[in-house]
Image (cartoon, helix red, strand yellow):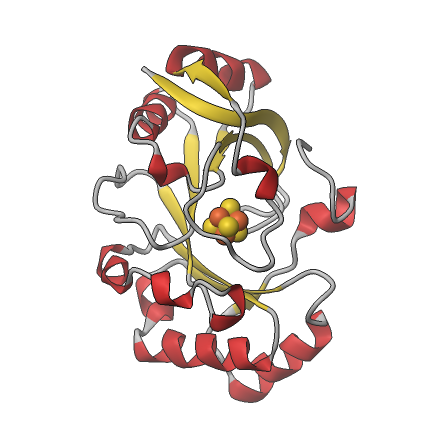
Length: 214
Ligand code: SF4
């Protein structure tokens, strides 16, 4: 069983409530969305075919206890479920970063799902799979990446309408780096008392906006 992989590396998690923790990353190749602000376009093509055993061995070799399965869109490759089960069976904590447009039903309940809700500024808001909301658990997190006030209001209203803060461990509002000022977003969130956390992409402050594989 194999997966097409763009990169595997050991780093520090830059997003979610796991931010700041050392984490391995397995970045799968390919995505069926084209978000306007995507910072991972290099995952759309290329990559190398890797066996699951080689991925389990490489990540175990880092010696950590956390692994992030990401992309691209990791749920496009069916064997990702076997990959995550293997990590879990080896005692690792697994986070899965997904665009929120693919069915979450097959995801192992032990996985911490970090699920995007794509606002209009992404250009992909019509792809949101709202049926996934029912599959979210207190283990999971929802992330809204925002480019402007319209995106913010869209996210604020849907967080309230779907009572997301009551369903998941955290709702994360993240400004697009260089497009929306964090202090502006923070002021909106405070004024509206939105049940969400402000999230900055830590890795971009540590390694720079265009860094990859770190
Ligand atoms: S889902 Fe992720 S990888 Fe795909 S286009 Fe959007 S930001 Fe890029």
